[in-house]
Image 1 (cartoon, rainbow, N blue to C red):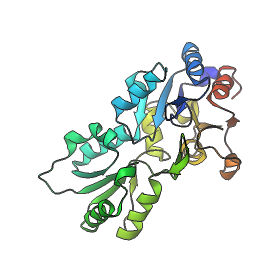
Image 2 (spheres, rainbow, N blue to C red; image 1 turned 120 degrees about the horizontal axis):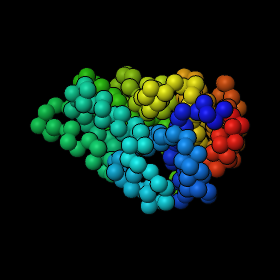
Image 3 (spheres, one colour; image 1 turned 180 degrees about the vertical axis):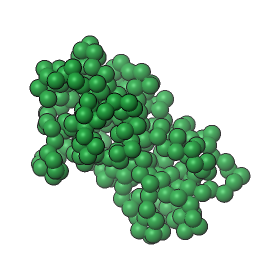
Image 4 (tube, rainbow, N blue to C red; image 1 turned 90 degrees about the horizontal axis):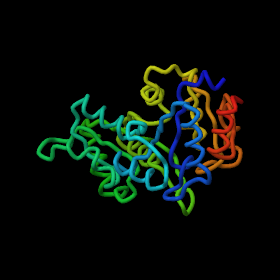
Length: 257
């Protein structure tokens, strides 16, 4: 079966690391996957860090990565902004500004609200500013719509609650860019067919269900945001449930999937 695998899509936060702590054995497991000549790509909804900062974080944690191996919702959002010639209000973390600062024209009217994970900006006045832009016809773009994520001190609210709040108040529907959208997974695969790919992640809905909806096999890992019984909340069930990324790689290499 391993010879039929032409791409392994790998989630980052919660799957390979939690903040600055590596999931035990993840570095070595990734090296095993590479040495087995099984192609992989990192697919992430992380919107708190620019592409450069994300790459630097991974390398500092000990992972051997190439920038072109990282496909993030930030990258996909940037492409959308350029293609639609938007001038966005950015509700994103300052560490992610690097990917967008050349796209914002301060002397022109903002015609889009782009929202990611931005704890410091999720306050009343900033959200009201975004709300007013939406009432004036600006489009709402969600870099991701995750319900929650795992921090070193426990689970924390994702941007999904704030996206939903703006949708409700302004009576609009956000265009969601990252996982679990089919477009995001298809863009990450490129010319690889879904049946020839596997997704490994800790989010049963965004990672696994999203991937399986277009025919990618899904491995749910019991790290990060995983909670007991998550695997029973989606249909079809995950292809595999593994204790961690280490076991997931073991299954792939041993052709057990």
